Image (cartoon, rainbow, N blue to C red; front, side):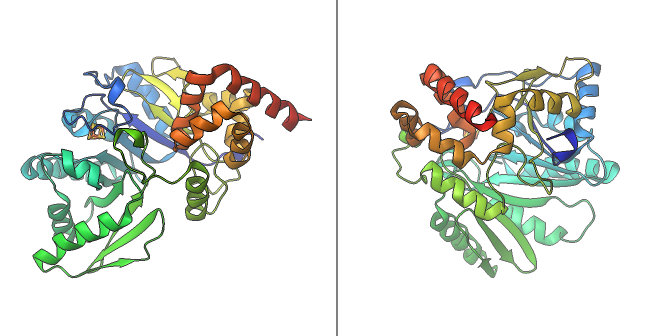
Length: 352
Ligand code: SF4
């Protein structure tokens, strides 16, 4: 296993931890506040280096990125040709504001050569909380601007696997406007909404902390992992699963406080945007040097989950936290000793 074996980096930049909405199911609710990502020349240089090997930059947050539009544009301006810049948002702001933001993003996309994309929450839980629902205007705008250079691609994502809610709710809204639409294959975690020649991808995820919403919706962790594997066509490991290479590329997140981490594995290793010279190579070297990180990036997680299942306390964590990117953190926090013991035994067995 060497640096060249890894696929492209996936870079998430969490622009802010502030969100005015406050959903009970939000996995970040306990850590939300009012801190935004601040960039100086050193941090900007680090971000540019990290971006060099990235095909998709996702601007997101422990909060709502569109509360910080100028910062979103500042980060997007670092991207360039052949890169996708995706903003993940509830888009629950007045349509005029959203339209102005899309105009600014598209002007930047044309100047810098990147492809802009808006990935908007679409699920029952967000629908109950966000004050403005802009799915329909977004579809109508995408139809009008379709084919024009620099036009924002639209995608939807549901924080639950409730496919029927999404198809019936959006279907009813489209039908009311007279827009003909169809759903082309609706799989367990993906669907395509077809409106005329417009294709809008929809993705479905397992709800984190379902106990706070009183829903029995989520798939058990193992079923969820199998479903992801059927979508991506490769065994689930940590890392960028959109990788043509043997090993998934690093899935890097920059937090609003400048911390840099591997998504889902922040308890294992962190860096800082302020660290001089930080780049993908340094992150990969750390990943290769650490037996636990190496295992989590190269061994199918389902195999490792089988070992966690043998310890009742860890098994209970797997039952309550059904998201692979969340479960390590919870096991470490609640049953650190047991987790450490199982992983040590597993790594010794793997090395033998
Ligand atoms: S809108 Fe998103 S970031 Fe804000 S509280 Fe809800 S889930 Fe969390």
